[in-house]
Image 1 (cartoon, helix red, strand yellow):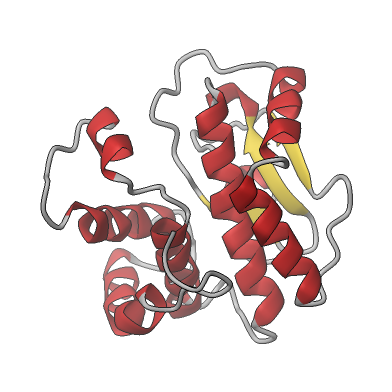
Image 2: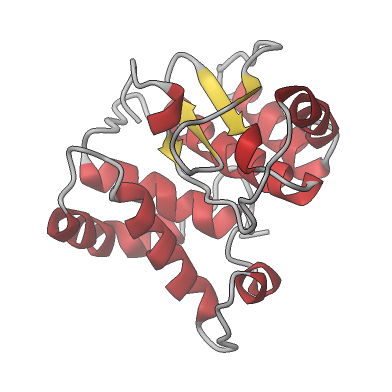
Length: 196
Protein backbone atom coordinates (compact mmCIF):
# COMPACT_ATOMS: atom_id res chain seq x y z
CA UNK A 1 0.00 0.00 0.00
CA UNK A 2 1.04 3.63 -0.10
CA UNK A 3 4.21 4.72 1.61
CA UNK A 4 3.59 6.04 5.07
CA UNK A 5 0.79 3.57 5.85
CA UNK A 6 0.84 2.07 9.30
CA UNK A 7 1.44 -1.64 9.67
CA UNK A 8 -2.18 -2.38 10.49
CA UNK A 9 -3.32 -1.11 7.10
CA UNK A 10 -0.55 -2.65 5.04
CA UNK A 11 -1.07 -4.18 1.63
CA UNK A 12 -1.74 -7.84 1.28
CA UNK A 13 -4.27 -8.62 3.96
CA UNK A 14 -3.46 -12.31 3.87
CA UNK A 15 -6.21 -13.28 6.27
CA UNK A 16 -5.51 -16.12 8.66
CA UNK A 17 -7.59 -19.27 8.38
CA UNK A 18 -7.67 -19.67 12.16
CA UNK A 19 -7.37 -16.30 13.89
CA UNK A 20 -8.19 -17.41 17.42
CA UNK A 21 -5.58 -16.69 20.05
CA UNK A 22 -2.56 -16.18 17.89
CA UNK A 23 0.99 -16.23 19.19
CA UNK A 24 3.44 -13.86 20.83
CA UNK A 25 5.69 -11.59 18.80
CA UNK A 26 8.72 -13.64 19.92
CA UNK A 27 7.11 -16.93 18.82
CA UNK A 28 6.23 -15.35 15.48
CA UNK A 29 9.78 -13.98 15.06
CA UNK A 30 11.10 -17.52 15.53
CA UNK A 31 8.70 -18.76 12.85
CA UNK A 32 9.75 -15.94 10.50
CA UNK A 33 13.36 -17.08 10.91
CA UNK A 34 12.27 -20.62 9.96
CA UNK A 35 10.39 -19.19 6.97
CA UNK A 36 13.56 -17.55 5.69
CA UNK A 37 15.02 -21.03 5.18
CA UNK A 38 12.17 -22.31 2.96
CA UNK A 39 12.90 -22.66 -0.77
CA UNK A 40 10.20 -20.22 -1.96
CA UNK A 41 11.22 -17.50 0.48
CA UNK A 42 14.91 -17.93 -0.36
CA UNK A 43 14.07 -17.78 -4.08
CA UNK A 44 12.01 -14.59 -3.71
CA UNK A 45 14.63 -12.89 -1.54
CA UNK A 46 17.36 -13.74 -4.07
CA UNK A 47 15.28 -12.25 -6.87
CA UNK A 48 14.57 -9.11 -4.88
CA UNK A 49 18.33 -8.68 -4.43
CA UNK A 50 18.96 -9.39 -8.15
CA UNK A 51 16.37 -6.71 -8.99
CA UNK A 52 18.36 -4.20 -6.97
CA UNK A 53 16.30 -4.21 -3.80
CA UNK A 54 18.32 -4.80 -0.67
CA UNK A 55 16.67 -6.75 2.11
CA UNK A 56 17.74 -5.58 5.56
CA UNK A 57 17.73 -8.01 8.47
CA UNK A 58 14.64 -6.27 9.88
CA UNK A 59 12.70 -6.22 6.56
CA UNK A 60 10.27 -8.88 7.86
CA UNK A 61 9.07 -8.41 11.41
CA UNK A 62 6.41 -9.73 13.74
CA UNK A 63 3.97 -7.26 15.29
CA UNK A 64 0.62 -7.29 17.06
CA UNK A 65 -2.03 -5.85 14.73
CA UNK A 66 -5.21 -4.04 15.71
CA UNK A 67 -6.94 -4.90 12.44
CA UNK A 68 -7.83 -8.55 11.72
CA UNK A 69 -5.27 -9.44 9.07
CA UNK A 70 -2.31 -11.74 8.76
CA UNK A 71 0.23 -9.24 7.53
CA UNK A 72 1.18 -6.66 4.99
CA UNK A 73 3.84 -4.93 2.96
CA UNK A 74 4.55 -1.22 3.32
CA UNK A 75 6.87 0.50 0.85
CA UNK A 76 10.01 1.74 2.55
CA UNK A 77 9.27 -0.19 5.74
CA UNK A 78 9.05 -3.84 4.77
CA UNK A 79 6.79 -6.72 5.72
CA UNK A 80 4.86 -7.19 8.92
CA UNK A 81 3.44 -10.49 10.10
CA UNK A 82 0.58 -10.10 12.57
CA UNK A 83 1.58 -12.50 15.34
CA UNK A 84 -1.76 -12.22 17.13
CA UNK A 85 -3.49 -13.70 14.05
CA UNK A 86 -0.94 -16.47 13.38
CA UNK A 87 -1.23 -19.95 14.83
CA UNK A 88 1.05 -22.27 12.87
CA UNK A 89 4.25 -22.21 10.81
CA UNK A 90 2.40 -22.71 7.51
CA UNK A 91 0.41 -19.49 8.06
CA UNK A 92 3.60 -17.52 8.71
CA UNK A 93 5.23 -19.02 5.61
CA UNK A 94 2.23 -18.09 3.45
CA UNK A 95 2.14 -14.51 4.69
CA UNK A 96 5.88 -14.07 4.12
CA UNK A 97 5.66 -15.47 0.57
CA UNK A 98 2.56 -13.42 -0.29
CA UNK A 99 4.09 -10.19 0.98
CA UNK A 100 7.47 -10.87 -0.66
CA UNK A 101 5.63 -11.01 -3.99
CA UNK A 102 4.24 -7.52 -3.25
CA UNK A 103 7.76 -6.37 -2.37
CA UNK A 104 9.07 -7.85 -5.63
CA UNK A 105 6.35 -6.07 -7.61
CA UNK A 106 7.14 -2.80 -5.85
CA UNK A 107 10.84 -3.29 -6.60
CA UNK A 108 10.53 -4.12 -10.29
CA UNK A 109 7.86 -1.54 -11.20
CA UNK A 110 9.29 1.93 -10.80
CA UNK A 111 5.85 3.50 -11.14
CA UNK A 112 3.77 1.18 -8.95
CA UNK A 113 1.18 3.31 -7.16
CA UNK A 114 -0.61 1.52 -4.30
CA UNK A 115 -3.38 4.16 -4.42
CA UNK A 116 -4.14 3.12 -8.03
CA UNK A 117 -6.75 0.34 -7.86
CA UNK A 118 -5.45 -1.40 -11.00
CA UNK A 119 -1.86 -1.44 -9.70
CA UNK A 120 -2.94 -2.76 -6.30
CA UNK A 121 -5.26 -5.34 -7.91
CA UNK A 122 -2.47 -6.58 -10.18
CA UNK A 123 -0.10 -7.17 -7.29
CA UNK A 124 -2.86 -8.91 -5.30
CA UNK A 125 -3.70 -11.14 -8.27
CA UNK A 126 -0.05 -12.11 -8.61
CA UNK A 127 0.44 -12.66 -4.87
CA UNK A 128 -2.72 -14.75 -4.58
CA UNK A 129 -1.85 -16.85 -7.61
CA UNK A 130 1.88 -17.31 -7.01
CA UNK A 131 2.01 -17.69 -3.22
CA UNK A 132 -0.16 -20.78 -2.88
CA UNK A 133 -2.77 -18.84 -0.88
CA UNK A 134 -5.47 -20.46 -2.98
CA UNK A 135 -4.24 -24.04 -3.03
CA UNK A 136 -7.28 -26.32 -2.81
CA UNK A 137 -6.21 -27.71 0.60
CA UNK A 138 -6.12 -24.21 2.08
CA UNK A 139 -9.50 -23.47 0.54
CA UNK A 140 -10.97 -26.64 2.06
CA UNK A 141 -9.66 -25.57 5.48
CA UNK A 142 -11.40 -22.20 4.97
CA UNK A 143 -14.66 -24.01 4.22
CA UNK A 144 -14.70 -23.43 0.46
CA UNK A 145 -15.44 -26.71 -1.29
CA UNK A 146 -15.13 -26.51 -5.05
CA UNK A 147 -12.99 -28.84 -7.11
CA UNK A 148 -13.00 -27.18 -10.52
CA UNK A 149 -12.08 -23.52 -10.93
CA UNK A 150 -11.48 -22.94 -7.22
CA UNK A 151 -8.09 -21.26 -7.62
CA UNK A 152 -9.16 -18.35 -9.81
CA UNK A 153 -12.35 -17.89 -7.81
CA UNK A 154 -10.28 -17.79 -4.61
CA UNK A 155 -7.79 -15.29 -6.06
CA UNK A 156 -10.67 -13.02 -7.16
CA UNK A 157 -12.32 -13.23 -3.73
CA UNK A 158 -9.08 -12.44 -1.91
CA UNK A 159 -8.20 -9.56 -4.28
CA UNK A 160 -11.58 -7.97 -3.54
CA UNK A 161 -11.08 -8.51 0.20
CA UNK A 162 -7.70 -6.77 0.08
CA UNK A 163 -8.86 -3.89 -2.13
CA UNK A 164 -11.76 -3.30 0.27
CA UNK A 165 -9.11 -2.03 2.70
CA UNK A 166 -7.69 0.44 0.19
CA UNK A 167 -9.37 3.81 0.89
CA UNK A 168 -8.78 4.86 -2.73
CA UNK A 169 -10.80 1.97 -4.19
CA UNK A 170 -14.57 1.68 -4.02
CA UNK A 171 -16.09 -1.77 -4.47
CA UNK A 172 -17.08 -1.07 -8.09
CA UNK A 173 -13.70 0.53 -8.91
CA UNK A 174 -11.96 -2.49 -7.35
CA UNK A 175 -14.00 -4.99 -9.39
CA UNK A 176 -13.48 -3.02 -12.62
CA UNK A 177 -9.74 -2.71 -11.93
CA UNK A 178 -9.39 -6.42 -11.16
CA UNK A 179 -11.22 -7.42 -14.34
CA UNK A 180 -9.23 -4.95 -16.46
CA UNK A 181 -5.84 -6.34 -15.37
CA UNK A 182 -6.80 -9.98 -14.72
CA UNK A 183 -5.35 -11.69 -17.82
CA UNK A 184 -2.07 -9.80 -17.83
CA UNK A 185 -1.42 -10.06 -14.11
CA UNK A 186 -2.64 -13.63 -13.61
CA UNK A 187 -0.33 -14.78 -16.39
CA UNK A 188 2.66 -12.76 -15.12
CA UNK A 189 4.60 -15.30 -13.07
CA UNK A 190 7.86 -13.37 -12.60
CA UNK A 191 10.21 -14.15 -10.92
CA UNK A 192 9.00 -17.74 -11.29
CA UNK A 193 9.11 -19.46 -14.69
CA UNK A 194 5.56 -20.65 -14.06
CA UNK A 195 3.10 -20.56 -11.17
CA UNK A 196 4.48 -22.74 -8.35
